[in-house]
Image 1 (tube, rainbow over the protein chains, first blue to last red):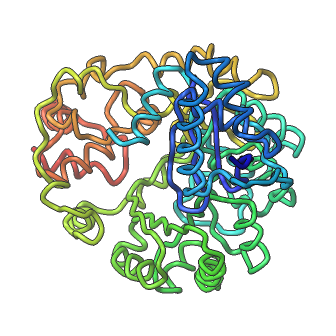
Image 2 (image 1 turned 30 degrees about the horizontal axis):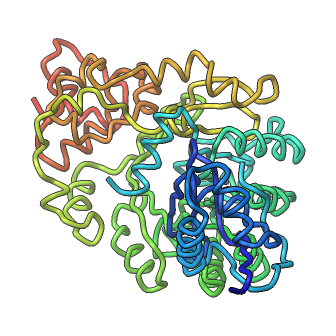
Length: 103
Length: 368
């Protein structure tokens, strides 16, 4: 399995609301809310940390979930968000600077 | 419930100001007849002050940010401010007359990821639009700017304020918006000046014009639904709050004053003396606004329009009582449905009336 790197797009608006993240794509004004698990993944999307490490080191540590199942769900989420242009996905580290982590 | 409504409900439950509107300046290159602002600079916030406030707003949870004025592009630091706002990941909507937007500015707005640009257009006829703005050539410049913005793929909306000088032109502006492929909103709200001067109210569109506009499907959509008789108020309606002002939204003036809304200039604190979060949480004025439920309104709680009225607490406050009726909204409810509001009936049955709002006296007279 190739490593997968993820980075937040700069063409978005985002803010933490309670334990969820609200995100709007500047490309098509679509509004998303991410649940707490998805929020953790999105916040960790720095372009440098492989998705597997994010799942293993962050998701599984914070939430009671098996790594294989968590990775499967995380991959589906990442592909969905990438399809909407709010997350960049690559098999190489993403050097373009991700926007700062939303407050 | 739509996702947007869910987000707003969650923000309200959490006490989060999800929306903020900052007027960066009251200076303007137009002098619109109906404008509620005094345009002299009385000590605008500096760039550093605005940067600091943007950080405070982000920390407080503000997501939707409106940058407006006056004409916001008159500030030499407009783009650095916008850049800072976007780096803090606000969803930015810009309200402007667009006269200063050329190709380069449109490109910069797109690069910075502005979500929407709302532009005031009063008429499709230059003599009417320019007559209102008092700036010769302003319609031509505004329309050229819209083309620049559209060519960048930006989302543009024409905001059409309906008033006496342009009563014939709503459908013309709507057609113009369609031809240009931009959104359109119609707003018949004319407010007193922020200093309380009510002389502008004489510009409010007369009843017959509102009636015609409210029955034009191109302007209001489903006319039958829009003009339907009001449903009887239920417990949900009686326990409802008026709008987002002070609950999930606030307004900040160029002088750092915080109000519940631009249309509700109730002084609630000043960011040169207090932190935003302290004003938001502890201002007695904002907490007073938040405490009001529809059932607490002395006149409106018994009104048949309660559940569907667009009653603006800010306009009510400017009439003298934030718990009172907003006469302009009584008028709108009446014109939509043909059913007088409780406020109109009370005025009609009062032994002596003294008109407080020029141009609206006829409303209560006609319902007697």
